Image 1 (cartoon, each protein chain N blue to C red):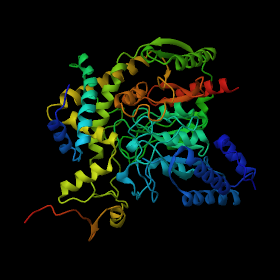
Image 2 (cartoon, chains in turn green, yellow; image 1 turned 90 degrees about the vertical axis):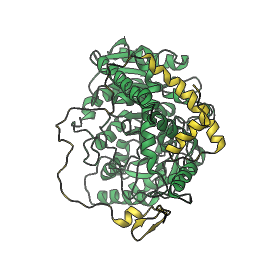
Image 3 (spheres, rainbow over the protein chains, first blue to last red; image 1 turned 60 degrees about the horizontal axis):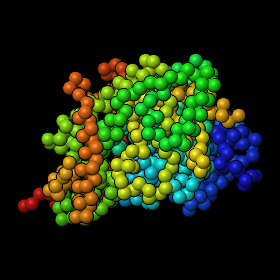
Image 4 (cartoon, helix red, strand yellow; image 1 turned 30 degrees about the vertical axis):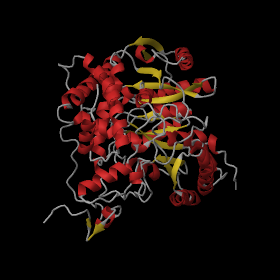
Length: 481
Length: 99
């Protein structure tokens, strides 16, 4: 019996070994993870809901398998946290919004079903920006998340709680969602691995819709290998999401172990202009390391990058204004009374949504409204095509693209809340991945002088997560040893 | 660019969103600032560019159609479980039709 499980250093493999050697049971691990997560929560506010019952049920199944001498599934006993925009049957799912404060979904997201089927133990639902709209986790109706590496700073957003949970060690894995950078930017700010797969690689069934043509589910982990294990399980066609892709899922683990010698890497010059000097030099050292590993590095151009911000905030808000129309006080738990039906709609939404969500609904409604549709929405869709073509052209020349994730490190809580445009600019290097649909990730590559983590962003061709993981894995290994 | 209070109110009406006077003023400023930034897209000549609504991949035309086999769906009870107000197996709302 061990009550001293070193949670922050666990990996999928070390948990497997621990269970096999009976150093701890799955139930003991789940209890330890829950107790640790609840204790840490007073510092970071990473979790909105703990799922003790469900966790102990899952853990008991694993212990039962062990007792009966069965083969263990790949995620047996692994503590998992799930962003609170991904629905869980019977487990409150709030989207960090007052409007869904008491919503209990009647079904599970496909990604959740697949992970639990492989033995994962869900310990709770993580805090995030309301409806995943934000870059700092300050837009949660239930208070901001604090960065475990520096408690006076933001963890990034919108999947701030999922990144923080993995960084502080309360969860070994977590699920986030990425629409404009919401996995990679918090991964970078918290010093963990975060993956945004190819659009359609992972089923969106059960992901509460923000901007359907941009939304992705993806994993956070402390190692590239663990992130790849999660993606391998959740990737693949799902009948319940017609946009989920038929493309076969590669054996990422076999692929990532190949060396990267001769791999052609592009550095998009637009991502290095206006970069903070500290971030710039850390990224520069990472690039030198890739050269040492034998990568062939050259400068490239993604010429429409500077239009991504405008393009994104038109497309994403337009889709959001439509997707969020369903929260009208009729079906989803909250209602503010009114004398007429329209009055109920307006009051429920006026009371239930926070400032940023309202701002985006207004912006999206405006750009879709009569007289502005062509000038804004259609124009943005055309520019989106140009941004996607930039990547197609670049990938005719190189195998992967490497860039910073964010122009700066985690900023102070409150620093940017009063300036929406400045906040939007923190996504400036991540938006293009979502707009074009290519897979991309953040892998930790160093720290600022103050000890704030910095992430390296890797983009690859559609469905070529293998090359992305291969580069990340080789890099990670070379700097760890 | 500037937005009048009436313009902002009209958009809020379209979005079924009740805004306080204070929110309305803040919204006018924020939207104007963001929309001004977005005007930079007009630097680009996109007359020959197709709009991109979705990331698309090659697949058979009927690939996304599944077999037409009946299967269990949510029960009436489950579907109504989150309703703020329900009755007789339906979602209830204030009276819509005046006599």
